[in-house]
Length: 160
Image (cartoon, rainbow, N blue to C red; front, side, top):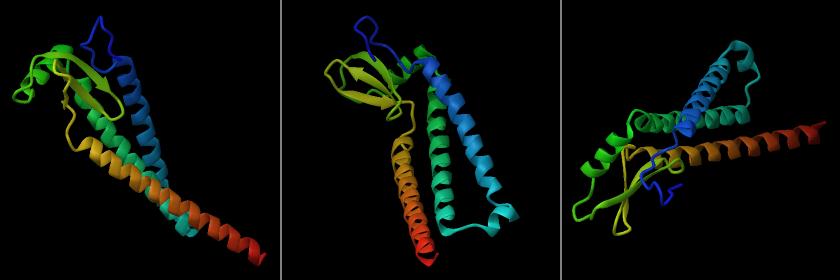
């Protein structure tokens, strides 16, 4: 949040660091779980709903890793370097800069101009669109998994 006393705020370091630590642990946990799904024992009882679930989890892991990659771009820039990046990337015709803010959703570092327009710097342009596509894909896979699991349970009850 930007306050009138300090309009030059980027991402909160404590939150950014917490996101990086928690996200890294989560990606590692998902990776270990997904790798465990390739063992012989789990392969014997693999169903189509489990396969879709695992594709969904893999997609979430990739999206989270991509988000963390974007966060790393911000982590290694000091305030002065962020301000310099705002100046360097300022679109032609944009008046003086009056502030800077960091948003986590969508992930971006926003430079604010005196005419009310703002623009994003530092975070690669492909991060947020890729995250949107990956999360939609993860949702679709999870939904498919749930539908297949429901059909399987319904069919099993009718037979029994």
